[in-house]
Image (tube, rainbow, N blue to C red; front, side, top):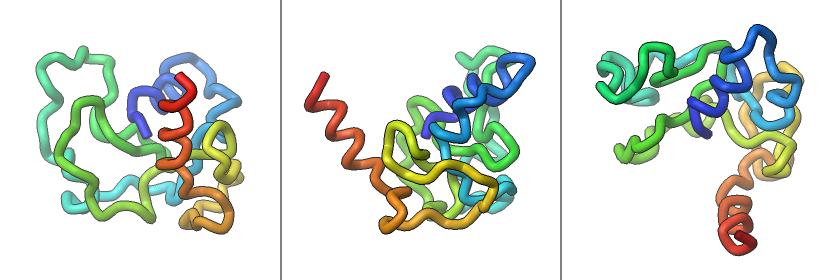
Length: 120
């Protein structure tokens, strides 16, 4: 999930966008403090990021990946924000904050990406 997109819906405006609970599912409310799970911890914000641009994590359990981060996916599958009900077919974020499973549709992100590439 894109940190910037989550930031746009969560913090950019004076109110939280009501669609955020349907677009994203938080598996935890806490942002990891482990650099193995969140490699951007302790790393300076890239020079091309503006002062108000989010880097590393949004907060309140919303964290994913930054644009152009090609470092690979860290071992954070059970923690980082995943696709929600729309458009990925996952769960609606109801503050249950539990790890998403394939049976509830919360881990269908790869299929959704492929589907979008084929259509567009």
